[in-house]
Length: 99
Image 1 (cartoon, rainbow, N blue to C red):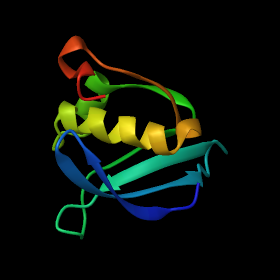
Image 2 (image 1 turned 180 degrees about the horizontal axis):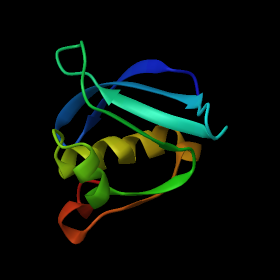
Image 3 (image 1 turned 90 degrees about the vertical axis):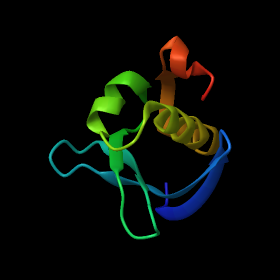
Image 4 (image 1 turned 60 degrees about the horizontal axis):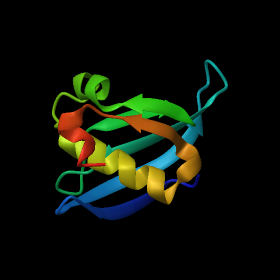
């Protein structure tokens, strides 16, 4: 996946993201990441091994400044645009409507 700056619309919110991939120098595995740019400058970043199953609730603890509804929306759109990047997204009933 080529690193790129994209804007996605999900759940009545617009997200300015940098998405891409890299090879982890310690483990040699391909990782996928996104950074949610706030004010176009900097923001929260999340990375995972390409093709992983992601759990919205546990990611909420890793991204303390991003709510789970936003995480669910962002990840579902990334999965839609780049299907090989995420195997499955698991969310509690409270956040399934954001997928």
